[in-house]
Image 1 (cartoon, one colour):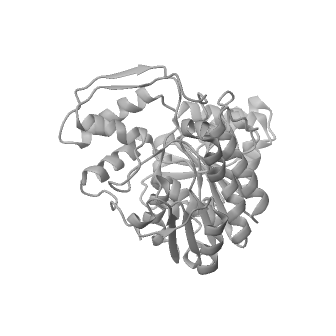
Image 2 (spheres, rainbow, N blue to C red):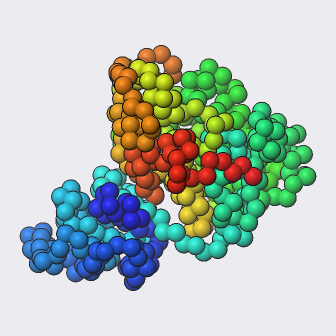
Image 3 (cartoon, one colour):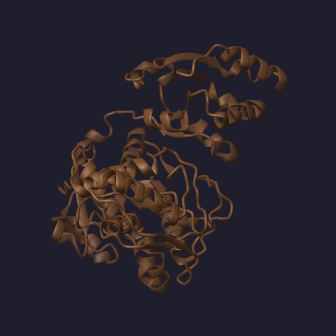
Length: 429
């Protein structure tokens, strides 16, 4: 949360008691606190509202953080919305506020205003996770690998399944597209408290060309899993590709309109998860990056970093806008959602969008700062053609703001190069 405040100058915490004791949430900050009650401002005419705000904040030092109480007034009052938006754009006065889950959903109904806000889920530490068993379906995937690396720190037991690479990682072998395989598995293993479905066809072009297989993995498997393990909290990992990318920012209530077969199968997988399982979670994600170990599936970012290592020129698409999210942040967000015991559709992606040329430029800067060699190649952009249609800009309203792309890249590089203070490379267990 401190990182969000440092980068964006404000944070809106979801389901938090921070307003009663902010120093317990930010014990290391040297900043002072000043409380402002928005309920005292919301009833004022616009001119008086601005004057009142000016008088309330008069004399506030640049290192002083405003604690905005009764933030729910922001979604009842247009003048208050305009005031807060102006404060954010000016970026001079940091503030912290909080809402409950109902308040967050209410703010989502105004996506333009909500897109200016940086939300963060409070880490409840309710003890929910420490008593729960987790089953990660698709643990050999990039995201599944991060769950298997991080979750044992918080959950009572963590098991993983895979298919073609299951033996390589020491996981249970399970073919989710074959009902007989699923039936046998759950006859021989205890049903988990939480099942996280990470399996699926994530390559949009491959899904377009192999539609039957993509549907079986992304949608039909959800029904099979429910039939043989209905008594679990089910988490379905979804995608930004359920949107057409024409009307960002997208909220959890925005109308999906996938423009390729991959997006359509993931949307149906969401629908099945929400319909069949009690209190399920669908978590839509942006482009993933990060590092678990040498066996990771290649991502756009790791391909860039390997090109820098070889001093090769890069030619990348410059049209599609990506909102990359760090693997470890996805794991942290999901842990907090489970701790809060919520259900429904949630979204997490990078707060700032980049095309791949911009991503490569930032990655090159991080490489030059972290690696022992300097990248001297060229980075060129082009408009990618061929393959299935892909949405241009699918920015989604975040339930939990991840770290910046630069920060996540630096961490990824330290892990890849074995630098000091990096995260543990791999803990598949």
